Length: 60
Image (cartoon, rainbow, N blue to C red; front, top):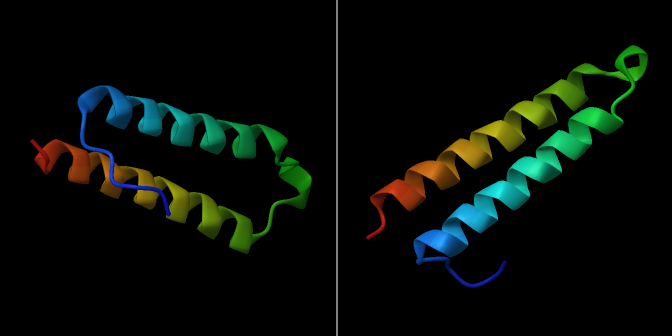
C-alpha cells in the first residue's frame, strides 16, 4: 500500500481515482457474462470506497 493520505486535496484525488476505476470495471462488464462472484466483488469495491470516505471524514 501507499503512504497515508491526510490533506483534503489528496484525499479527494484518491477517491476520484478509485471511483473512476470502479466505473471502468462496470463499463467493461458484459451483462450476459456476469456471475455472482463478479457482483460480489463490485459490492466489495463499493464497501471499500465507503470505508475510505468515512476514514477521510474523521481525519483532521
